[in-house]
Length: 375
Image (cartoon, rainbow, N blue to C red; front, side, top):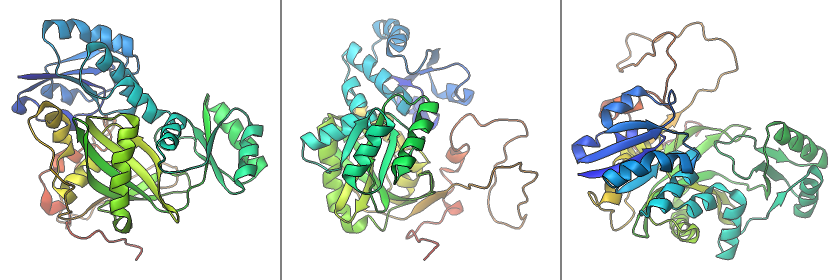
């Protein structure tokens, strides 16, 4: 029987753990998780998921009673704190240094430069004046964003010194303490979902995004057609990048911009992707990253020798209406689909609720080439 601790996250990655012979101890914050996850866990302990020493204090007595085989997380917020525990307990996995190298965008760029990968002009800036100076040096559009930002929050496209000053004020109002300025990367945004074990990286799925003017994705489709001409380069860059940051085990999600000069790293994460991406990858490539999250590190499943070819296609779209109140939703009773309705007054506890309910409902999803509806 294996035993792991999972810090934060949602039910999907630990669903079925018991049947696999894996005891899961979930570390989470009380009230911030779906209680339904409890049926998949040996126990749930409460601790702030961003506080490494607090998590270690909660897990060390359990580790001494019966050692954990792994301590892992699927959430960006717990990456460094989980790495702290991994280091302290001497376990394989994502170290605190690797988690920090991926979360700190300036450190990511430094490591890429050090290894001669994905050249992008950037600078850590400490004032609106420094941001304007960088803009003048680049001579084109630049992006100002938090150096440790997540989920496309507080990203500002800047073309003038006046815009740089306004963006700086907005970042300061949002209490952003570290700001990175980067040249604006022109081109489609794509991603590569990979899995690693014992230092071997296997790129699995590749997706493309449609985003709004705030750089927030509203559609993800897998596999990406625009990535195909660059696929060999993307896979090679992914592997070399993961080596550069010291990742040796587990899932990763790396995002790129397909610029006229070639693919450039946008950012990467040592975790499963959001937006339902693991389910898209499962449908399009036949690889269950949610399952692998548990099984590959423990040796239950093994990584394929090579990147798989797609077997179908999958996509997810998020509706982004104007702010307001939804009075009613009408669904045609003649539609041959299965529906899930959220009870009135109940707030979903997990991202993309009910997605797991449809994991085995292939007829509800079209599988085939991904077609851009705008074409």
